[in-house]
Image (cartoon, rainbow, N blue to C red; front, side):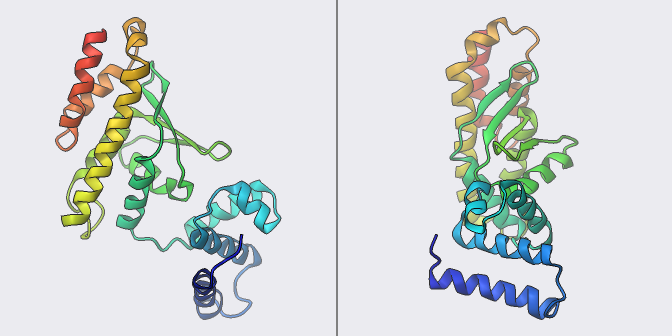
Length: 230
């Protein structure tokens, strides 16, 4: 992939600041420099899948993933509000699938895997954890926790002082789309199955979501459909 002049400048400026000004020439370990270069290239080109990066840099996919993971910890400068804005933008475009009726788990393909740690951090703050398969880039998580995260995201100043006003209005529109896509998949494909799934945790999680102060009103229609099915 050819880089534009602006992309080349952005990559060089970041490497100059980190590799030269911060550490001094030769002061950064080769592995860290490799991670920095891969990270800045991925950000500049919006190309974050390991297959494409491994082809560009002529390395194994496993090494590309390892370098991205390392760089996301050491060199990620994105502010929390910007990270969550990007994360919600990605989530509004994915397909949410029911992974397990019994456990109430959803599965979705995270198209911005570099942001997974922000999602995971919020899940852990709620005493839960999401699983992320680096090979398939699928995330599996508890629906109740996902609803709680969306409810937190609905609140003013949830991710800093910029999370308000017109920006928050835009983020809330994304959240409504995400809730709608989750509900659409459940109502289109799983209402019949819920009739016979006596031990399913899913209905209770949907009921819980409908009681959340921020997003609950957008889930109530799905609750009614689930009650009708059962």
